[in-house]
Length: 246
Image (cartoon, rainbow, N blue to C red):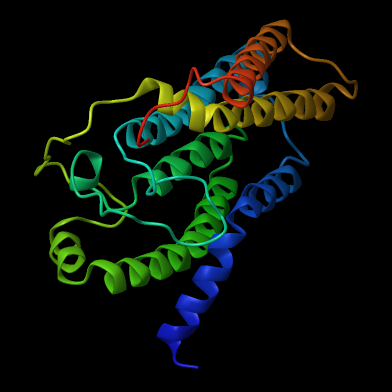
């Protein structure tokens, strides 16, 4: 099998299983926490560092939210059954970067990797993420080239794949849909909170050798859970979050 076909085949295989990447990264991360110490050997400083890392991850979620809020039905999403693209997104955030959702995912995991304040652990997570998603992006672009032909090629020639360019923004035709964001990203929102809460409990155990949770993190988790359950109920039991053609 030629290298191109191998990349496409493996990329499609990984696309359908990309939900496993967080588990792989988390496993690597946990192994790297074996000798964890509070930043500056100070629990309070470490707490504020954790909040900073959480905010970095929320920036990644914000990139995803902005993307999802401006895209039509049948394009960007969390589907894993196969490649889907009823239309080609080239405006808005897609006018400066071809894979904004994956960029958002990267920033989310970069924030998580910073939590351990270990440069080598962050580097490993970045490398694993890149190797995993590089093939997914390769397979996705092969699909889009076959479907949209020259339209895709012309867009890709002027738009970087992963690192956004600083000029050339084209206003999107779609109005931002906050409902669509709430409907499609509430799982990601709560997943971030779960991961950080788990890591906080874990590192406290590593340092103190006893299980417990900081009150502030308990409140963050509790509020996140309430928001998650509320949005999940609205999505599953009502049409409040439904938006036509989104």
